[in-house]
Length: 381
Ligand SMILES: *[C@@H]1O[C@H](CO)[C@@H](O)[C@H](O)[C@H]1NC(C)=O
Ligand SMILES: [Zn+2]
Image (tube, rainbow, N blue to C red; front, top):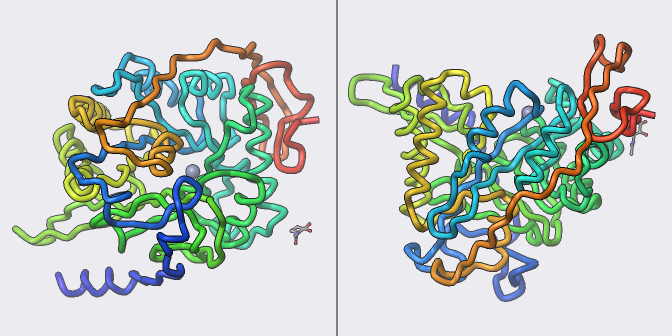
């Protein structure tokens, strides 16, 4: 049994690292950051703040918002800075309630783009041309800005649906539309020790897990690698296999108890915390909390992290600020942000006819557009 499993897994591992060598004497922070599995600027591990990046994908609405509220608007604070913890949201359009996106934003969470259509076809995303990617990403930024009342300049991150980019087509669009970072690219080869975020001045520096991967250089544009998680699977008594996954909720079998969930998250965290303290990804869909035990395990893990005075739960954007300008823990001063006043007067909009199958509702800030916003008509005129 065991050899068969091993063959199966090695057959799907295709390792190609395409980037050119990043020359540290040319590539200088803050605008250019070389890839590293070491320490930034020679920081000692124990002097490096450990950042934790919580992210959630897809629509934001009344189904999942209560969990976000419980996690992020309930007084949880980083121990050393006493700043509220924050998360990053990759938002897709359908079923999103933009008045709730505004709430997340005013609590200083990072709101990012995850496409308009989120069409469930990896072929579509792989083959989409420049025009389509511009509409899906730039259009979604416009939709969020207009209907959640958030400045476009405040929406700087992207995650591709199903992590399926079209390689240089997608990266060219992200760069030309002035997004600042992508977080769609998994790495398995550079998971131990984990890879730090880097800019693409010298190209893509990871294994290509989902083809195509970018081959060109993109000045000052960050990749926040999806450093793989590993889940221990017992294949025979005392024999374990490490099952890798790009997002914490994709590793199977799913942890089912509070303790199993806590241990799973903690083991993966230790691979960062005890090696080079590369920012730790905790990338999920809220549906992972559908098992109440699993949700408890997650919250237990977050609260365990918050007892450490060298751990900071921050947005991806804030982790990147540090990567641009690394400092020893004792010099690092997190600037706390308090919630902004709401500027959202919300309306429930209903559409009996949409470009989709059937009617849709959309809650948004401000007046309802005449039509359901969608590709090629993002303002809903
Ligand atoms: C992309 O494809 C669409 C339709 O599939 C077409 O209308 C458009 O002109 C194409 N754009 C480019 C840049 O090729
Ligand atoms: Zn998604």
